[in-house]
Image 1: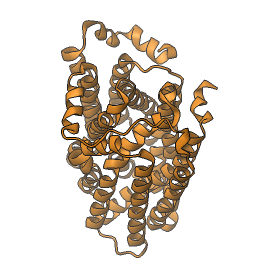
Image 2 (image 1 turned 135 degrees about the horizontal axis):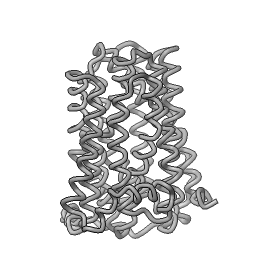
Image 3 (image 1 turned 90 degrees about the vertical axis):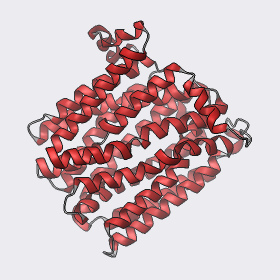
Image 4 (image 1 turned 135 degrees about the vertical axis):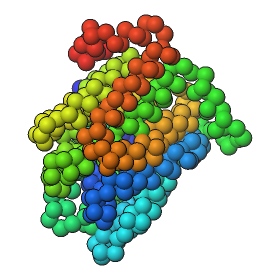
Amino acid sequence: MSLFRSLRNRNYRLFAAGQVVSNSGTWMQRVAQDWLVLGLTHGSGTALGITTGLQFLPLLLFGLYGGVLADRFRKRRVLMITQAVMGALALVLGVLAVTGTAHVWQVYALAFGLGMATVVDNPTRQSFAVEMVGPSDLSNAIALNSAIFNMARIVGPAIAGVLIAAIGTGPVFLVNAASFGAVLFGLYLMRDDDLYIKDRVPRAKGQLREGLRYVRGRRDLVMVLIIVGFVAAFGMNFQITTALISRQVFHSGASSFGLASTMLAVGALAGSLLAARRKQPRLRLLLVAAAVFGVLEIVTGLMPNYPSFLVMLVPTGVALLTFNTTANAVMQLSVPASMRGRVMGLYLLVFAGSAPIGSPLIGWLAQIFGPRWSVIFGGIVSLAAVLGVVAIMAPRPALAVVRPRVLLRTFGGTR
């Protein structure tokens, strides 16, 4: 089937199998980490926002250099190092939690350390996809990676909620540490002869500036980055908002919090499978998906009870994943291979590095005005960013994305 065409590639199958296991463990740790911080700080939304912000702060500070390293070194070897480091950090946090010696400052430090590892891991892993499957199947591989990621979001939080309620947060961190072994084993089994390896970019002065100049000269890429920055900073803080709404608004326990994350992931999984069928991503789809996501997030924040809140998370996840997948594919498919690592480093800097700006603000808004307003505010900013960028930067034909007929055609599957 064309939907799973990337799985015909042996190296991609090995990578995908490892990612299923590792991503499930990672999402288990995210839920456990949030619950641990809330327990250590007696439900502080600000502390939760700081933890998330510290995890993404290194990307804001050093993300561009990670893209340079991704272009310079063999990606498979770099990934083996970064995955091993992230597994070791999970092991340390697990030992602290199991022994009852964990303090919030230690969680902050380990979150920052994880962020340092992802500075190199993220652009390398993103640009490694084309080395596994080649340019013709890159869009499909990106979508399937998102599907794998979101299947893990369904399984991981649900398991984490049950484990946290039964035995506490510590064992969840230890399970995640062990899960990195699956990725390392898959990377070890890959054959370099089957990879689409391009010549490495030799070390030279000005490579970082060269990448920035290239993106600055591309109006379409600049539009994508601006919208991604606003949506990521203010609209994609569900790790914070679902925890606070579950605990403070609807007074649910750890298992129900995991269910909220799972419902969002169900929608995201559906969005990623729809994206896998598209051969060529388009900028118009990206703009429509971002606008629809903003509207749906506002509606989600207004839901009167927990069941309706959970239901609204599904279409919100579809729109969010459609936006994320399209943005990623547009950035990778429209740049030369020699520039892909640096462009993706910049993209991930904007995508993930926005969290240190938005997450503490969202946590503060939740603490002052209530968790509902933190969700509604994120939707308003996301929608305003799309409309503002289209009005200021897009050519006149692009304004057609706001017409209802185009909205229906786009999400009806014809684009």
